[in-house]
Amino acid sequence: MAEAGIQGEGRVARRQRRNRAALIKAAREIMTEKGTEAATMLEIAERADVGAGTIYNYFRSKDELAIAVLEGLMHDLGVSIQAVTDRFEDPAQVYAFGIRTVLDAATGDPRWRQMLRRSEVIADALFRMMGPFAIRDLRQASAAGRFRAEDAELTWRLTCHALIGASLAITEGQLSPAESERIVARLLCMAGLDLASATELAGRPRPPLPGR
Image (cartoon, rainbow, N blue to C red; front, side):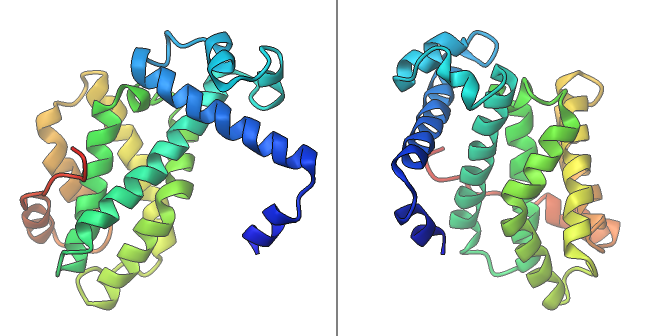
């Protein structure tokens, strides 16, 4: 259906779609090179080969563009997590690996860190972009008897807000990065595990992501 819609779109719609994708790609490159704060809308527009004023037809502010970049990063992270966890035999470990990896990204990647104060917006983006992966993992672990998440969607939504809140606390020095494993264990308890089982699961060795 989506492909049919793209094939049937008009010339203006195709140009708009290409311009938006080019702006997000350029912003991702520049924000990776020099950080979100140092990036400017002008240089992003120039790299994307889009008029300096035209960029505001797609994004009202650099903050809004940075969120679009972060949404792409979230989706890519979900794909990378799946590439690793497809080898796991324990479905609960799949979910645990995912939330620990998100916590590490949110506290370690400057493109995430600089957006954490927009916690409500970022938590919603996390829910939407990584939800298809996480909700599936929650349901599979529950079906296997490892979790007791009766409402996987609600569990993931609550986990997103807790993850972003904990990440912000770590980046602002209110929590130590050494607390990450305990944070993950508590988040696993939200899926219906007892604390001892959650602690064991959170402490399992984690293989690296592809390309890391």
